[in-house]
Image (cartoon, rainbow, N blue to C red):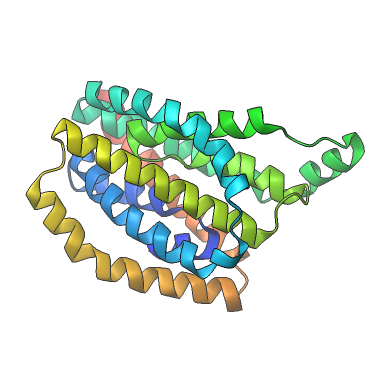
Length: 245
């Protein structure tokens, strides 16, 4: 399901994966398995829109990521299991709000046309900074970049294909960076590598289905369904962890 969502929108793999896996396993190990598979999923989806990729649009948030990721990894190392589950739940709630708001993009478009505003490089780098912090800490980097990308698309600065290409390149690089950092700290163990390897064929299958839907079917109804499921996951995580904090 996570890779299907990702194949459609270019984001959502983290939100769905990290909304479900912590319900039946430790969130720390879940985030590591997710990180490995996310590298593969992003590479697969990026390949489908590679012709729309512009490295100049990708490098701006990457500048912020380079600073934010180490901070997020440090935060990750401070969490215990209960705190990690609660943090993931909070970020998922934020993600649901952000994604739901970006689906109502007419307000943003009208404001951009009225003000003639164009976000500069500082805005993109700031989005990358906070995405790096969220990604390093709880493996859910989406909300800051989703806001930034939706704004750029609503303003006509990016096409849908360009947004998807930038997202998958950014999130793929972020997860590769996170995987290297966690490997260096000794958090990536052989059983987790094996588990991720077993999951990768389904990641490819889900990504293929998502790309097909993106090319042939309206994503609106599917997107709202995913948001509803994410909301349920987020509140389950919060309600089962907050009493233990």
